[in-house]
Structures are given as C-alpha cells and as structure tokens.
Image (cartoon, rainbow, N blue to C red):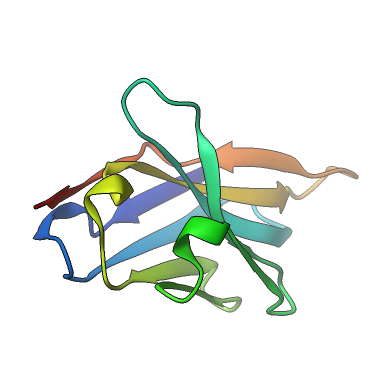
Length: 121
C-alpha cells in the first residue's frame, strides 16, 4: 500500500500565500510524476501543477507565475508554494503521485485525502 499525506491548507486573505506539502510512504519502488489537483464546489477536479522526477514542471495557465511546485526525490515529498492567492483559488487541493510499488511492473496513481484552501476577499 502507498499513502499520501497532505498538510498546509487553511484560510488566507486574497494576495496572501500558502504552502502545501505532501509525503508519499509505504510500498514504494519508484515515484514518477507528482502533482496537485484542486476541486472547487460545483466544478470538476483540475490539474494545478505537476513535476517529474527529473524536475520538469507543468502548470495550469491560471496559476502560472503565482504557484511553484517542487519535490524532494529522496523523501518522496512534493510541495507547492502558492503566492498572490485569489478568491478563485479556493478549493480542496489533492496531492497525486504516480508510483511503481515494489513487486509491480507498472505504476498506479495514488491520491491524498485533500486539504481545504480558502481565500477570502
């Protein structure tokens, strides 16, 4: 089994900053892509940012220049620094990791439990 544990959500005023962290643990042979999705009330879950094990990144257009994703391959952690937050960033943020477990020849997607980010005006 593989577990993802997130931390760092909360309430912040517009223009403020938050940092989310996610740690993967368990039966891990290799962690491939890690990333963050978010889901606002009444909307579909959307990709926020992703990062490969080599450090290549991909961002949603709506967060480019404001959010920065990083990872620590040795610790199997991924972080996202969110600056200049807007009310429209309010959502539940989910960590995702594409993991190859020990004993398997393919990777599986694992999700965290989600952490609430609320940006007030």
